[in-house]
Structures are given as C-alpha cells and as structure tokens.
Image (cartoon, rainbow, N blue to C red; front, side):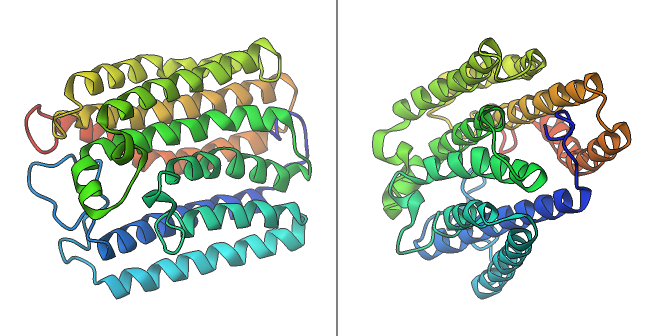
Length: 316
C-alpha cells in the first residue's frame, strides 16, 4: 500500500517488521500451548482428532518439556520487544503503542492473570492484533502516518482470523469447558459458533465491498473475492459436520486457504495499483519475491494436506 501510493519504501524496516511479527506469532502459539497445558487443556490428543484444533500437541505427547517451551517463548517475546524498541527509536513513538498492543494481546491471550482466551475475549483480541494493529503499525513504519485506507484494507484480515479461531474452537468445545477455558464457543455452544463463523465471513466481504463503494479501497480490492468459493465450501462443511470434529477438518483447511487467497488478493490489488501509479518496480518485485518466499512453504503444506485428506480418517 505504501509503495502503491509512491511513498518512500524502506526494505530494511519492512524486513524487521516481518521478522518481528513472525517471531511474536511463534511466541503466541508457544504461550498458548504452555498455559493451556498447565490448565490441563489439550493434554490428550486421541487418534481420532481434528488436526487443526487443540494446539500443537507437542507438550501432551512429551515431545518438548514445558520448561524448554517456556524458555523459547520468553526468548521470542524478548526478540520481538527488541525489534519494536529499535523501530520506535527509528520511526516514532506510535510504533511503541502498536507494539505494546500486539505483544500484550499475545502474552495475555492465555497467560494469567488476564487470560483473554479463557474469558471469551481472546477472539476479539486476536481480531485486533492480526488486523489493524499489524496493518496500521506496518504502514506507519513505512510512511510515518496513519490512513483510513490502511485501516479498511487490514480489518478484513483480523475478521478472518476471528473466523479461524472460532472454527478451530468448535472441535475443542467439550475439552475447553471441562478445563474451564470459556472461549466464545465454550460459553455459547457449537451452534452459536457456527453462526459467528458465518457472520464473520459476511463481515469480511462487507468491509471490502463498502471500502470499494466508498472509494476508500481501490476497485482492484475486489480481487479478494476470489476466496468466496472456498469460504462457502468451508461454511457448508461446517454446517453439516460441526458435531463431528474429524469430518470438520476439511472446513478448517478451507478456512486457512480462504484466508490466504483473500490476503493474496489484496496484495495483488495494491501491486496493480503500484504499477498503475508508476511506483518503484524494482522494490515492488523485491517485496513480492520476499512474500513469495514466506508463502511457498505454507502453500506446499496446504496442497499436501488437501491431497492426503480422506473422509473419516484423522487427516480427512
């Protein structure tokens, strides 16, 4: 977006932000695993289980010692904070605000005494963190300003993350309730979870549509609708199989794919805008190459997951 508006683009700062976000996400996942394990959540991973829910299972299976995971988690959060402080000094105080929101949402997603995810607030916290916090923060690092367009373009990413958390919580409904982890699905039931999933996807496409109609987003942002068939298929599978965690797995996988396609559609939209506005093509190609390097392993893993899915099996 910064490139498409012909702002000066700083590859080094972009790379630091990208590394910081990835490390913070790693730390979030480890913290969630560690504290859920301490609350006896996700300790058992039977053979017939949805592979997209219930955490990584590394602690429950004894693959990693809890103290080792905690140390790795602390190291990752420390590295994130170090990157954030450097960017604050280099680019301005608002970076610190975005960083504090992002790290706080990650640390206290499962960590006491707040434990957002145990009180029906984790989903909203991650909507904020994975949408506008990362988006506006990254945009500010490049441009040293904020914009309504950056907010509108990144809000759908947070809403989709909300959708992903909701569908992943449905197979964990009973286990979460027994452990006292009151996610939105655990509090209000699987049926409510299905409805929240449908509504959140509707909100994702509505934000993009309204953004285009109001001319806050470019017309090319409609490329994000390429994910609609995947989203609809995920909803259909969820509606039929929300009581069967194993048969629900293809819906989880389609959710991941739809999130990726929507994101790539928005990236493509602003790449086209950049070419049209005579942005620095060399920088644009470098940026797209870097993103492709990060995306390729995920794309290969998703393709392999789809090919290996057989209905009625743990991976199906």
